[in-house]
Amino acid sequence: MFISKWNVYALLSTLLVSLFIIGCAPAAENVEDENWVIFSASYAKENRFGTWLMPASTTLEYWTPPEADVRALEDGLSSFLQSNSDQFFVTQSPPWERLSEYQRQYIGLVIDGEQVIYANYFCRSFDENWKKDFVLVLDGGACYFQFKYNPQSGEFFDLQVNGEA
Image (cartoon, rainbow, N blue to C red; front, side):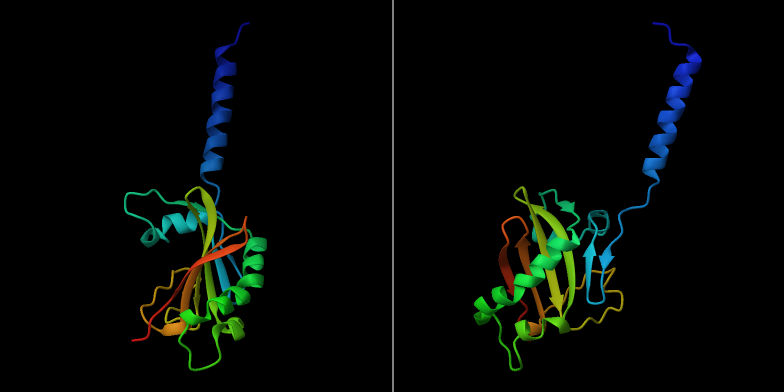
């Protein structure tokens, strides 16, 4: 079979243009609603979100949770929080009765080979760019809590409620 050098050039040119187009494609966008944001895998990786959860020697993998997984998480959250009510010190109505007042950030992480959603809930943010910047607050009590959710099993785990100063 004879391949002319012009066919080789045409093939290589097409390949290079295709790679250029793929490389220049915009990164996946964050998905957001009024009170929540799902950080895309590329955005979370670029900003190193979640690196504080893993040992420094671990390579963190990201994925972008679909909105349906976040909706399932939100549907089951109230029961999970109520079953862990002893972790909240509250002087007002408990968080599970006012979840609509919380702003939420979601990050898809791969932990021990499992896709997990890391959820960060907060009742107020001092950062107006909370849909772009991860909110990390020390203290603040039940106004700030985090947990993990496995969308394959529907399991909630690792609830962390901020302490009171």
